[in-house]
Length: 201
Image (cartoon, rainbow, N blue to C red; front, side, top):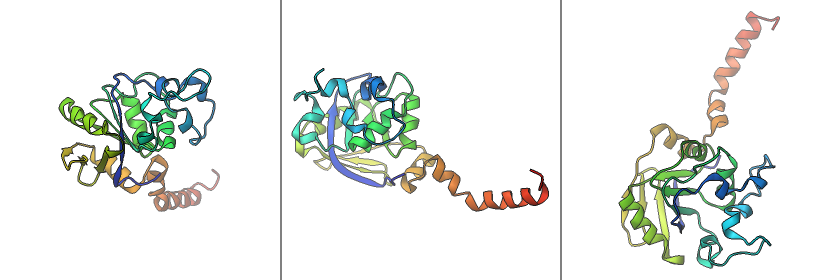
């Protein structure tokens, strides 16, 4: 998993509440178990017509936001059904950080396991960040995970809280497999002792 330390990039405003996982990546794109290739279908029903043509009014289709790495979204982001394809699609598009006042629990947990930083902020701070994100190509923010702060284009700062263990995992690029591999020597040692003591297994 890619490490997350400090990210500077364009933030896209998605001022819609209750964005569910089917809106993030519709069910027809869940046939794959690969984590790549889903970015083109991110927010499919909002980004494209039924014929597959881009809708110019959708934020990620606008020139200033096509390479956004940060998403500033409305309340209760990632609600709905449980699907890990949702963070996969965001990550494949290039989104490394989602900012909202609240997230659905399963989506929130899946973000950390895939190298995306979901940040919870107050409604007042979200309003400020949404205003910053609406500046088009000037909507550049810096997400500083070590110092737990968001810096806006005018130098304003918003502090955020994060669980220390999740912060450690992101800073070191550790998903569940990575955490297990940190114990590789202990696992090898146990297996050797087990094989010697119970050779019939």
